[in-house]
Amino acid sequence: MTRAERQDLNGNVTGKVTLLIVDDHAAFRSFARDLVSAAGFSVAGEAEDGESALTAVESLRPDVVLLDIQLPGIDGIEVARRIADEPDAPTVVLTSTREASEFGARLSMSGARGFIPKGELTADRLTELVSNGRP
Image (cartoon, rainbow, N blue to C red; front, side, top):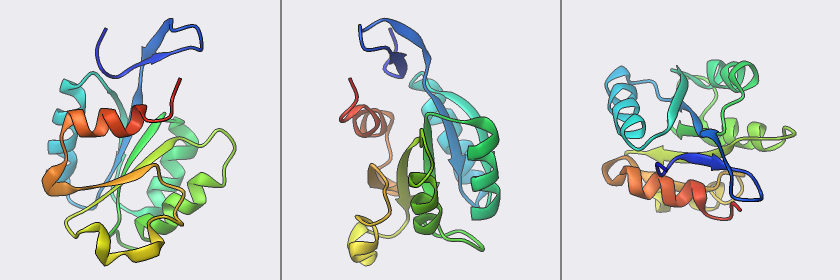
């Protein structure tokens, strides 16, 4: 079993965890795609701004959204808040080149599962954060 497989309440594997990558820089999306694919996630798609992220979440229904905070248009914190308000919302992990302290209480009010600075993003860290609190 890979690190990014979904399990039902009985522990049965039900498939790979699907992930949407949202970032306005193509180079980071490519890096993140390689990183999460190697960890066993299935990349459902990519988006480059807040509006397209919301559309992609609605159409692709990913399990996880790796979401940059600094996006053109709607920022990632607002996108995360809107996603969290949806029924059966995916797990959102925020990321940025900036440190969490620069965003203050906005991070905790976003509805995201957590935050990983881009410079510290690893497959293990993402898997641990996504798995936290799941059966």
